[in-house]
Length: 184
Image 1 (cartoon, rainbow, N blue to C red):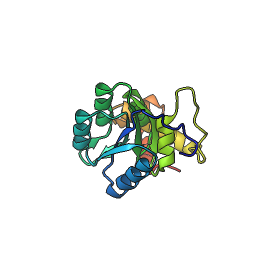
Image 2: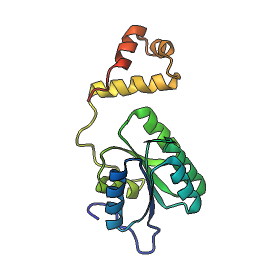
Image 3: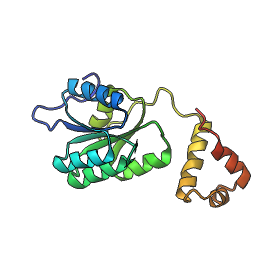
Image 4: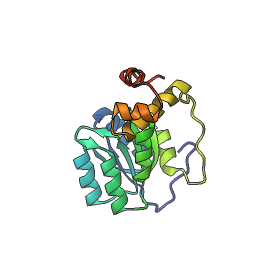
């Protein structure tokens, strides 16, 4: 399994993958099966919650935004059913605020799409004392600033005036920043 910790014989290898992108879901499921996992998949929050209720898996890989809600609901249910389960969040809409929320709900990592199966397995199997390798393409300073502004904006209930006051920024300047796409 490349540079990840191999699964021990007899260890629970069940993994739930929840993603509404059917082709990505199928590719990741095949790749995880090839790495020795017993895969259950779901395309919606409702299906994911039903799978957790049927038999809570040892691992989960959950997309953040699904057609019928937030993947964080699946992680929260999984942690209630099986507190020792290890879950990661995958998303194409990464920001620091949602990463913090995911970790608070019990996710062990937060990966931006597209993540390959090796990255997923490495995140699921990483021990608490093992530090991950530094990213190949870390966020730029402009992106870090944008993420911080987005986090404060979310924490202020998406209130532009309150966010501008807390950031000591002119409200119109903040509105222009919020109207733009995230920098790379």
